[in-house]
Length: 144
View 1 (cartoon, rainbow, N blue to C red):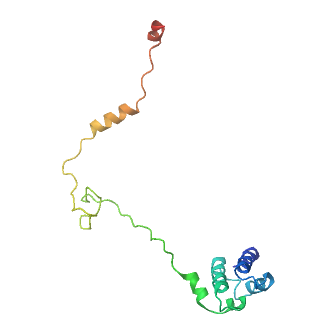
View 2 (view 1 turned 90 degrees about the vertical axis):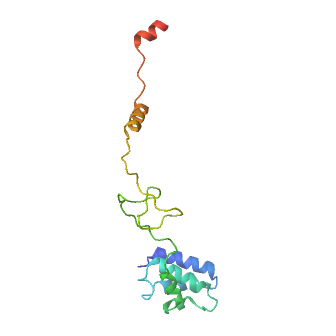
View 3 (view 1 turned 30 degrees about the vertical axis):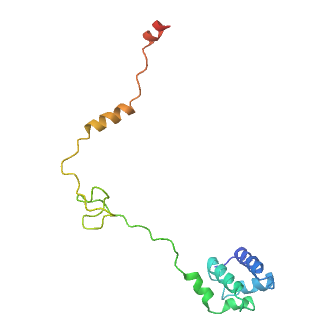
């Protein structure tokens, strides 16, 4: 439902587009029961549509059904949200795609058949995460 503040913002925007229309005239149209129950974005789009149409003589045209109300229903040009699926054991080793699906510019690469020994990698990472040992207090005093 259109609030008074939203109606006022729409009215001021319409006057900017059509200086021959008045705020009281627009507020009367926007407060009418044929317009007020509609969502603010729909009213704003429809009002901008008729204000920009040279065939529109008054804002009362908003009461009629017309393409200005259909303009509110257009679908977004935003791409749909991608669908993710869990990885399967036989997915492509290179791109992660399904064995039966397409593989962006390459052929299917099966996953490695022998298990990878990660113990060396783990040891290197652990060594990098371990802070260096603090110097002995005896050694520091001797060097001084």
